[in-house]
Image 1 (cartoon, rainbow, N blue to C red):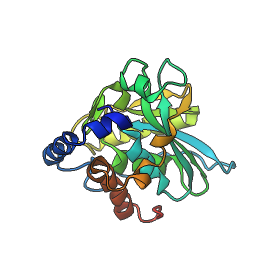
Image 2: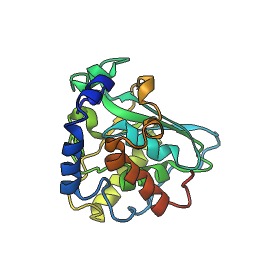
Image 3: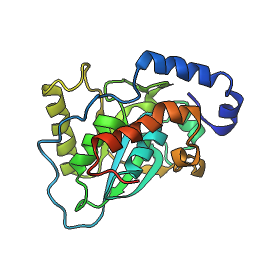
Image 4: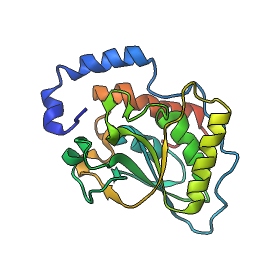
Length: 226
């Protein structure tokens, strides 16, 4: 689904009906009724006060909104990663031809929240890791589920956690999340940043993204912040 502003306005009559039908089919905008177990293997405590994680899982609006509400997260930025085109525009990424995915760069304080906790939130409330090249009403490789690691330790923690969730049969379908080295992150256009807070009553946000933030508050009260 192309969500550029002119197209979105032009489609206001059609999109609400489609979203309502999707919501009725899916029954939920998040994958689990309760959180996935915490990672058995997590990153070692870091002496640095700042680290970076990058996640992709459908439209970046919802992923960004979830992590903005996590204690210890200093910033969450919507952008593009995983492709062959540097500094792509939203319109380019929306074609699916650049290889980039809508992604969120999370800068966090590892003394307050661990990389493993971020992964637990990512898999539990931020998106559905069993949907291949799509997420809810959005289709295409630009909406794929992916973890872009910065260090070998992040790679090890992410791959170990996916194996843990798979062995525990946490999801009824196979996890399709890619784990790939981060080769660049490109900030998205300004109108995409903090989108949920700026458009809290937009129907797409109400149906697909607000439930994720509500689930974070309910299921991770220890790390949730207003």
